[in-house]
Length: 117
Image (cartoon, rainbow, N blue to C red; front, side, top):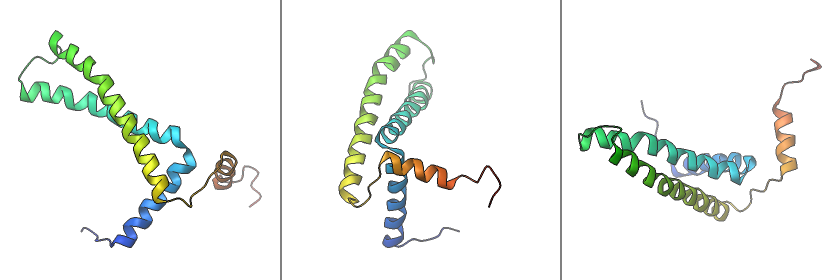
């Protein structure tokens, strides 16, 4: 049911994910990390309010706390994305992409629109 992977396979998969992420660019990588923090903020805080504190979901106190914690979540996820990017650049220094190479890669993956294959 669950396939076991050795460390070499895990490293190769991580390198492939990093190559794809680097090809898409640093802003997109960090933006995705930040959006994941936003999703956590939208889901975790209301769940804690309802199940842990048994409070009303949209009371004034909850909304105030929710809005105060939002920038903390976003800043934390932004910094996490930035640190991950720097860490992966140090871990895999041989992967180099330019904007031109990314455009070539996008068009190479598309099927031909003329049907001349």
